[in-house]
Amino acid sequence: MTTQTRITWLLKWTGIAIFAQYALTSIHHVYGGLVYGTPDRLSMPIYGGVALLITLGLLFLYQRTRSGVTLALFSTVTALLWIVTDLVDSLYAHTIKDILFLVGVPAAVVQTVHPPVVPQDFVYTPNDVLFEITGVLKLVIIYALVILLYRLIREHQRSRPSSLQLPAVPLATTVVAILGTVAFIVGGSLLLAYIATARMAVLIPSLLVNGLGVLALAAAITSFIRKPHTPASENKAG
Image 1: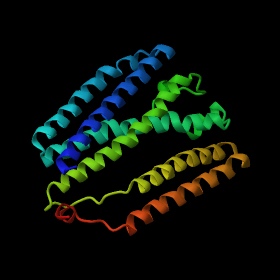
Image 2: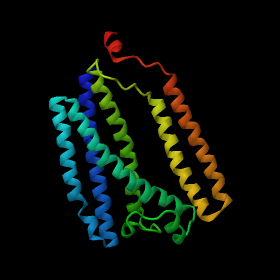
Image 3: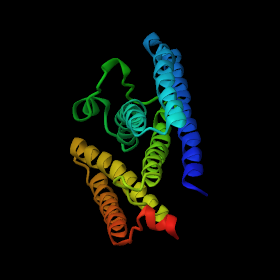
Image 4: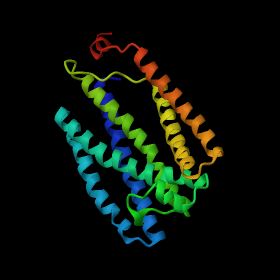
């Protein structure tokens, strides 16, 4: 598979991932608006639709021009609108909150140690499975987008040998890094629960999970550093 073929493949799946994030976010907010009687949530597909058109427009423009400036603009918009924004919502407003609920932290304590960014948009205790699941699932698409965006930038640089090139990241290293990140999310939430409740039954799992997270990320970083990275120009020559 040539570099240009890989770029075309990555563009297709990056577009699909962005649309999937828009669809999942829209379903999540519309459903939440109907269930909890919050009309503000119902407008999300409109604002999200504008963001979607802008992002896919930049993606299409890069597909036609293969311009580095267009790719930089597309990457920045994608990172801000579809990675960082959704990461805050999915991680802070759902994942950490749900873990605190599952370990039995009282609502009054959660409001203190894990205050909501938007008070009227914070449901605790969680009482609707579909609303919480659709909120947490956005993390999966965020991971996919990060990987696709990294690979797209790298393939773009491979097509221009004179540019500074990002190194390849082995699949095993990526998987271990993701598992380590997940462990930190769970372990950090449990540690927050311990701070709120002072229960040793929560502290011990928190330390174990955080320890696994440290080991996994250390292994991923070590593997990445030690793996020899072959320049794109040498790959083409071979």
